Length: 324
Image 1 (cartoon, rainbow, N blue to C red):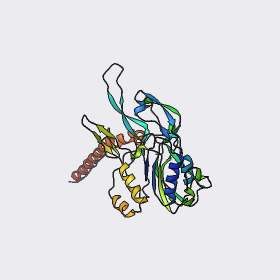
Image 2 (tube, one colour):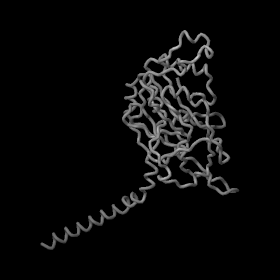
Image 3 (cartoon, rainbow, N blue to C red):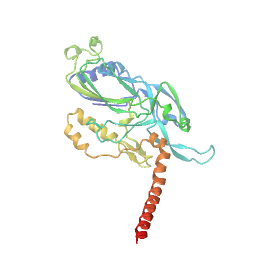
Image 4 (cartoon, rainbow, N blue to C red):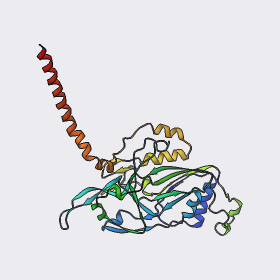
């Protein structure tokens, strides 16, 4: 079962159905937005990012994860088109880095994330694992870069933040978890509760603890959302992970498919899929800091090598023919 970016609160009967599905061995992939904000709401230049109460906190906490109502900013981020023209002039859209669209890294030692490109996200939250949950193995699959920071919600976001020139000193947090895989036996969130008031006749089939199963919890609902292109005749769904501004395809589809195969027990398919290695993007923050060094290496060093080779060749000729 895939729970993809829910917008409304879950009722207690709905939570009971999900909970008992998991207790009976069902697998679930959660893609949750804990903070409600989108680029459409920023069309006027600023918008209020509000905490999104889905009534799932107690359920996910019992399983072993807490999704934090914060927004992740990362120097390793995607770009968006921004109008830089003065008021009254024709629009002039230029690409600019938008730190609220992190490009997440994936560990290479896990079969789900091996050889994956970066994962494209929008307005991401972070999550914490609950160490007190025994019998559950927690594996972080996606995380931020070494230069990130958090913004507490509710907060007013503005496109004017793009004009700022952030540095690594402003982004002091590292490797914040965004997606985690849980494997093991889970406790029901309805254990020791009067469930007869929630679901009639539920006592007969209620399971307080699950059989061994697994679930994926990702603190971003847009990770699994396709972009669309609107034409006069139709609405075209773009491939998952494809960015229409940079014309790049990120690793979202491969990540979702690998997680799906892992939960379904098809690990052989994961190994086959992970043989194709996708070239990774450059670390934008690091390349910006080391720009002068690499410019010198690529422009001055070749010239020095040629000059040195010429000097050595001239000395060799002088020594050879002076003896003659």
